Amino acid sequence: MIIKKFQANTETEAIMLAKEELGKDAIVMNIKTISPRGIYKLFKKSVVEITAAVDENIIYKYDKPKTPSPVSAPRTIHPGIIYDDDPGDRPLGKTDISMSAEPSAIEAKLNNLQSLIEKQMYEKEKGNAQATECKAVEASKNLACMQLIYNQLITNEVDEKYANQIITEIEGNLKRDASMDNILAGIYQKIILKLGQPKTIDISGKTPKFVFFIGPTGVGKTTTIAKIASKFKVNEKAKVAFLTADTYRIAAVEQLRTYANILGIPLKVIYTDDEMKQSIDEFSDFDVVFVDTAGRSHRNKEQRDDIEQLMNLIPDEDREVYLVLSATTKYMDLIKITEAYAEIVNYNLIFTKLDETSTIGNLFNIRMLTQAPLSYATFGQNVPDDISRIDAQSIAKQLLRGQ
Image 1: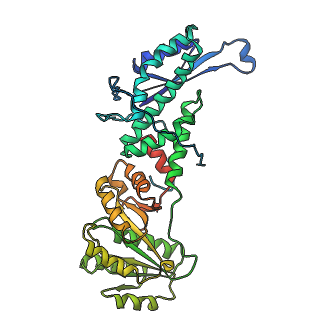
Image 2: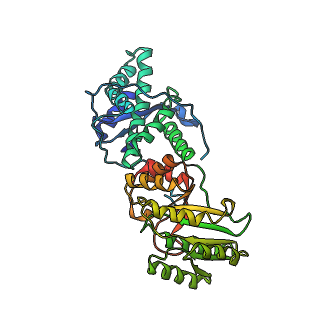
Image 3: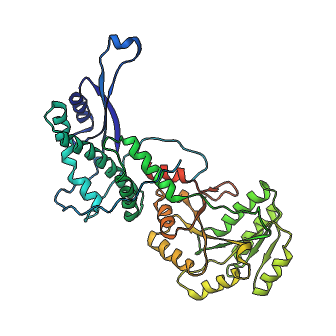
């Protein structure tokens, strides 16, 4: 998507400039009159400025029937990828959009109104359009803008039902003359609200806190534990210990032992429930104990039961559980994994390997699906640097901005 501003003496001339540069598919998003200020107002005339956008990859399907739009929910305004630094705002980039064979209700409504935009904008300038037509022009601009944003979300692999939900909730609360900036701001705030505040490890209460890391094989649980533990050890000056129940892979134990030696953290390997109970007394004067569990198939109920039994040895008030997922995992697999683990425990979400994917829609999808709090994200192998708490504002910006 390309967004540019054009100025001319009249609205028609400004639109013609936009069409010449951006092509016949350009969409007018905003129109305003700019009056000169100060002493210059004596020598200069007012000019008309329009904001126009074009996405050459959008395929409009006018032959699809309209379907009713979902009922709009009341809009809630909330103040407001995954990195703690703010990459800053920038215009939406050009995207590669592929529309589904059967457009959603919102898509159908937006597509059918596209042809109305150019016709009625010219009629408005000539003074031939009626008041109702002017209202239709403004509504068409709003809907066309929302279509571009909707498709941007889909490009970033946001589930269609969640993209529709966001657009529907915003649509019913827009003013007739809402600008593109206002529409973007509303959707940006809506995404932040849905993502919620990150839930990170808290050791300010009763200690020791036992923190379990669960999840499928190969997602980077052990490396993630080392990153988090090193920050508590170095930054918080916390008294930290390691437990590992991952006795199925010798390499996993040795990897954690290496990190333990570097950080000066005690490590204990757990083979039985009795050894786990002994560890509760052994580390009673520690602030936090990180527990590495074996990577298990979410389809193997017996293996999941073993993890549940291990975690149940620690009272709920003394433990936190983090489900570690890879951002590169297919969405359908993520659904099955999260549903399987939800059967045994309430968890918070950690996403790894953000540096290995170009889209982060799955983070939003899984948050919406599970309603489990987002916690941390990792984006590289460097310990302890390549990790941070998940930042909802940064996620929203990337979902709207694209790659």
